[in-house]
Length: 282
Image (cartoon, rainbow, N blue to C red):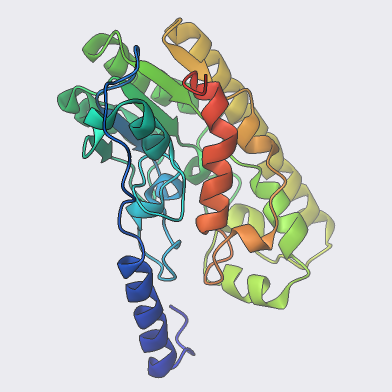
């Protein structure tokens, strides 16, 4: 946390987070017979977005609020929606996403999903491949695709009948659009939040404008490769069609500490827009 924050403020945030813990117990779901085609084990792969990072008012993972596997009351995650279809799924949702993970970590996470015997796997990765110190440090598009293909290959070979949902990278450029005039957001971003995009957030210098445009283009290229990789995977893979990227979020959907990671409202929106592409909505 920023050094200027007082100990009292930190303690207050911790108390609020504990209250979130107390109110985040899994909601009771009905018991009964599983609907045909319902998954028996769910696994989530990706980065800090999928871990619910920052959604419990501390800058740490809060998996109960994950759009994918969360079991808390505040987010109607894919897991909670699937639990309505198959009560036997209870307790069989595994979150292998890790803060800071890039596409090259996907294969290792996929191996864990194979060990879980997952038959529904969500994949949301790529933001950290772009959120580097400089534009030149971003993962090259061809390397990004190779990393995605390697991870998906692990799933296809290890769990050939599993259904896979590949989610587009959210529109991080929009975060700059809606936040660069907000002093609190700009101050938070100065602590190293996605510098390739958010460094010098208020600058209108040509070099900074060019840097942001290059970042935006890279995210678009990554999403194109995610779509193509899912298509190459075969009929068991679904791409979200850009649904996550099209979300026109505002600052009310990100946490007030780093002004970057989705809060419970943002996680709920991600769960909502990616649910129909998953193929389980009907």
